[in-house]
Amino acid sequence: MSPRSIVGRILVVASAIGIALLAPLTSTVTTRLSVAPAQAVIGSASTADFSSDVIYQIVTDRFNDGNAGNNNPTNSSGLYSADKSNWRYYFGGDWDGITAKIPYLANMGITAIWISPGVFNVNVPVPIGGSNHSGYHGFWGMDFFVPEPHFGTWADFDELIAAAHSNGIKVVLDFAPNHSSPTLESDPNYAVDGKLLRNGTEVTRYHNDTAGYFHHNGDISNWDDLYEVQYKSMVGLADLKQESSPGHTYMRDAIVTWLNHGVDGIRMDAVKLMPLGWQRTYTDHIYANRSVFVFGEWFDTSSSPLWPDVKKFANTSGMSLLNFDLNAAIRNAFMGGSMVDLDAAVQRSDTAFTWQNQQVNFVDNHDLTRFLSEHNNTARLDQAQVFVLTARGVPTIY
Image (tube, rainbow, N blue to C red; front, side, top):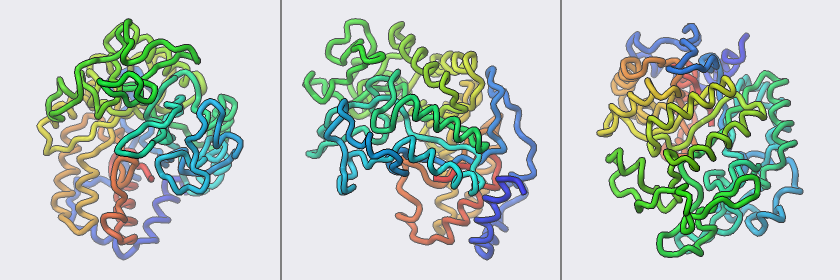
C-alpha cells in the first residue's frame, strides 16, 4: 500500500459513514489517487513534482522541543515562555524536535513536511497592542543568512534534512521575502527598526535606508488595489523593495543559502504583496540553483476583485498557489454548508489553473482559525480532510 493510501485509509476509516456526504458532487471531482502526476514544469524550469505527496505542515516552535539548550539563546534571550503561558513568546520547538519525530511522520504516511521560516528573526520584544511579541512564527526576519537560534544551528538543520530524506520525506521551507520586521514611521527606535543583517553584519535599517532596501510608502489601506499591496507596507512591517538592486541581490543570495542545505521545496509567503515580474525572475533563479517545488500564499478567493490576478499568477509566475478559493468552499461545505458550492469551486479550479494537480489544498493552516474552533465536530473535520486527500491537487495536513 502506498503512503498516500495509508493516510487516506486512516481518515476514511475514521469517517466511513460521513464520507457518503461526498455523493452529491458531480464527476468533475476526480479521485486523486487515480490521477497521473501533472506536468512537472510549472511555467518554468523546475522538474520537481509533489502531485503524489502528502504534506504535513509544522509550526516549528509549537511542535516538539528536542533541545532545551536553545530555548533561551544568548543572542535572542528573554523571549522564551518556559511554562508556555505566554503564546506570544517561544515555546521551545526546534529542528531537533522535528528530527526526533521523523519516524512518527513516516509511519503516518507523510511524504513531505512544511516547516516555519528558519531565518534569524527579530531578537528583541516587539510591543504590539500593549503586549510584547516575539518572532516565534518565523515571519519577522532580521538575518536571512543565519538560522534562528531558537530553532538550532546549521548542523541541526542539516541533520533534519538528512533524517527526513532517509525516511523518504521531503522538506519544504517557508520563506518570507516581502518584509523584515515591524517598525513605526514615527519611531526609529521601535524594536529593531526593521533591521537587516547579512551573516551578522548590519546592512540597513528602515529609518537609515540609504541604499534603498525598503519601500517608504506607508501602510496598505485598500487590499484590493494591486499597486498598494505590492508597494506599501503590511501592518507596519518594513516592506522590502525587491525591485531595487540591493534588495534583489540580498534575497537572491539568501534563498541560495538555504537551497544549498538541501531543501526540496519553498513555500513563498505573501506573494500577493510582491511584483509578479520580480517573482517570476526569483522563481527562475531558484530553479537555476536547485529543482524544487515552489508554492505561494495569495489569500484571496473567487469573490475578490483580484481573482483574475490570482489565476494569472498561478499560471505564469513559475510557482503554484495554496488554493484559498477551494479551501473556503471545503470549510463551508463540511461545516454544514452547500456541497453544490463545493462542486462549483472544484470546477472553478479546473478551469482557473493550468496545473491543477500542482495547486496545494488544505483545511487548516497557520493563517486560519482552526476548523474545530469554528465547528467543533471531529467527524466533519475528518471528512474535510478525506476530501483534501482525494481531490486533485497536493494535500496538506496541519
